[in-house]
Image 1 (spheres, rainbow, N blue to C red):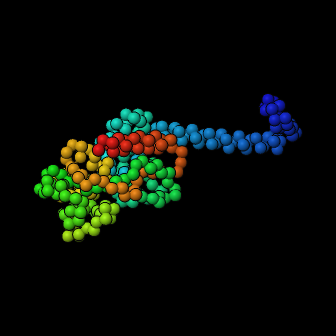
Image 2: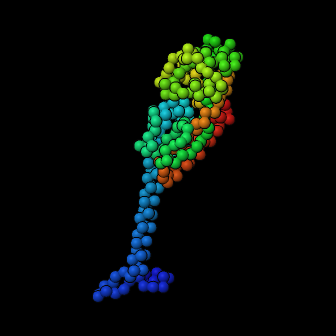
Image 3: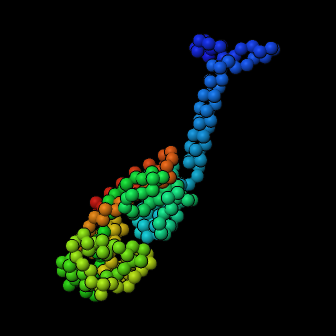
Length: 258
C-alpha cells in the first residue's frame, strides 16, 4: 500500500478512531480494480469454457450430409483443439441462433443485426444430370434454353432455385417441365445421380460428383447473389474465426477442384 500511495502521490487510507478507512482516492482505486478483476474473471471463465466445451455448429441437413461430413476428418486435423458438435437444422435460422454457437448456411443479405457474419464464398447454382439419364447424350449437347421445357426435378426447400437460374440466363420456364419434388436437396441430388431427371444445385455440393463422373454440368453455374456464410451471435469466441477460416479454405479448394 505504501508503494501505491508513493506512486499516486496521495494517501489511500486515513485513520478513523482505531481503524482505517478509504480516502476518496482509495475508493476510486477500489472500484476500478474491482471492475478490472471481475472482467478478468469473466474472460478466464469464457476461455476455460470454450476450451472444454464443444462448439455446436448448426447446418442445413443437405449441406451437412453432402459437404461438411465428407470434410470433417480434414477439418479436425486442421483444428485439433476444437471439439465440434454438428446439429442438423431445417428451415430458417432464428436471429438468436438458440442452442447454437454458430451456423453454416447459404443465404443472401440482409442478415440479422445480432449476428457476426463471416462470408465464406459466393453461391453459384446450375443444372446437373447423370450419365445414367436416359436422354443424357442428346440433352447435354443442347443449349441452356432446352431446359425451359425439359423435365426438371424440384426441391421443396428451395422452390425459387430453378426460376432464379432461368432468370439469370434470360429464360422463361415452362411449368409443364416441373418434375417430381423432393423435400430436401440431398434427396434431389440422389435422384439426379440415379438418372431420374435434371436437378439444380450449388456448385460446391456437386463438385465431387462431377469429378467422379456421377453428374455432369454441361450448362455451367450462375451466381445467385447469395453467400456461403458462418454466422454466430455477437461475442468473443475466437473459435468461430478459426472455424470460418478453415471452412473458407475448404470451399475455395472445392471450387478449384471442380
